[in-house]
Image (cartoon, rainbow, N blue to C red; front, side, top):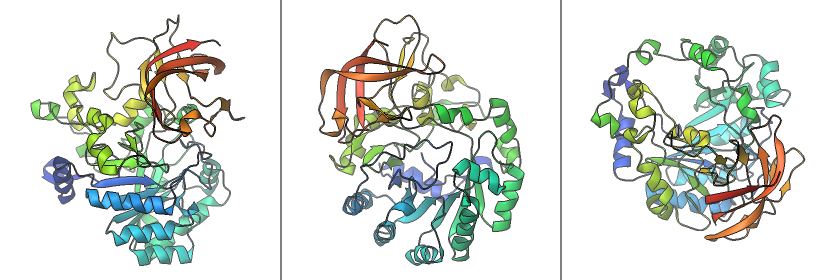
Length: 448
């Protein structure tokens, strides 16, 4: 799922780690051993590649977060990642961390670090936070600062790394690989100099409102191949590039990721999803209990029912045994089971990433061309082109019924995007927050 639990094998898979065995046992018993909880989507940086809409509010308050932590502890969760947005913007961050530690969670923070001074570092060390992940995008301050759009952010983030490591916290530098970004050998040298680990992520995803702009920052397939053949990026390159073993029945009956199996993600508004990169809303903690959602959500049941043999393309791929497939990214690209079957409808309705669970559904209206649209029940669009969810009818109550409602479309088959107005009819269920509606059986009438 998320990287909340680091699952590794020694000797190219010949020896299973203790953490592997714990994770496997938790999954067999239906225990969400690892949970990623975003405390806010607000941030004090403006990273050009970020997928979050920092204007979305509705964050759970302190009491709500503590109640969620109580439920997670009762469910058997052990590993807790607290993230955002920027967690340091929560005035109650130390109260939340202290409460999590009182419940014996292993706590990891994801942060940009620019608000972590000496006192903050002292407090995290006193509370027993095990690890902090800090985003660094280049060894060059001017490049990093251009990406975050905050002058001086590189220096402040590096100082946070030093403060936390000096107090015994494990620190890992996180690098989002993008066009015009890091020199990977230089960044690894910087990490070695600081005495910390480093991890690269070469996937830039759409924004939660469906805006595809960040995706243009992805490096090309050829650059990605070069990246992962760089020993400064991939440790154990020889083992990683060994020929894959043929897929057998045992492998075909397994699943490709632990998302929704041994862990999950919770948004600042209390929505539960399989993973932070798997935007399928399975329920709201403002309406249901965590265990009720974890054990009974039809969305989780669907995710858990998928085996490698069910994947449309991957099941017959020679690299299946060595591939770290992400079903969440597959959802964002159209289908958690992978590329659509040849018989699938050509029209695709793709909702905003969290706005409507980013579910991809066939467009039932007869259109002369394939369209890819962003749709929201909110009737207003902000000046920057994103949807304004604040006055959405779905923020008021939840229901299950067929209805027709006005929608705004932005058509991605044209360049630039062409805004239009139309309506959608389908079954809608909401989870108590405007960004958590899910549609099915959608019929689109496009008037643009």
